[in-house]
Image (cartoon, rainbow, N blue to C red; front, side, top):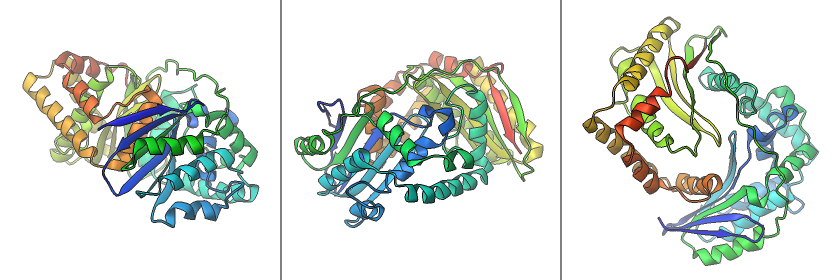
Length: 405
């Protein structure tokens, strides 16, 4: 794809891909998430994402909701540990409407107290729903231990107590501190001429002049491997097994991507799906996943199984990891693994909304666009020795395990 990159006078970066399509995707990627909260404000980044839509000095909450919906579009947001995305999709031709609305929300949100009180309870219900899902809750429990002592450890939603204590004033302060031009990217995927879009971005976002004074992030320190069990008297055991790896900036991440996909990726032919589910019927779900952050990363395996089968599943996972770390993958096998992964990249690129969001996050995190073509090229350069090194990052003496019963 062809990209147009532009930086406004205030430091805000803009990424545009021109596509011949009837739908435009527009969003703002912000380089702040739950990792950037103070200890007394856990859940604030996610709460700000919710309450951004609750009114500005120009618009009511209802007016914000209907602004894009009235033309058939939508408006949404999501929060992670290191970034927040506010995004919209709409029929092509409404780019100016979307950009003006997003800029208004960021510059002028009032966080009215009556709306804050209502949203407290909405988010508390979200927390309760999440806690009722042990297959999701186990990830938070695991990260609280493997990142202990660092802001990466706490969960994104916060607790009912911390959320109910949040005020509109604290929301506005968090927004002013973190939603600064130098910490944001506006991304657009649209059939409209990029020069025309840049003029609209300059009109609506050029007024933002919040100074960039965000506190520096501290890298997580070493945490000794652990083997923990939490008994909540559930019907099934949910286990995560893995280790800290490398950051999103480390070139070794490409070998980890391949290893992760080969070990427990989404395909029925992945090693662990074949060994645990297809051959032995021990699990319904097994996944290997990578979480990448600015200064560290995780590669871990999740498995949900009967409590009596936890030990058996872990032994098979450990056996397969030891095998991958013991001998280099044969050239023919490595080629097949690369072909599969690059094919998955190509298929995923057919989702234009996800690709537009990935474009914005890439410029936010890397300062350039690393698209699927770039990733595929790096994947093809991975050697058998690179894969061996990646597997050895998951040596038994480095791995931790948490089981939620």
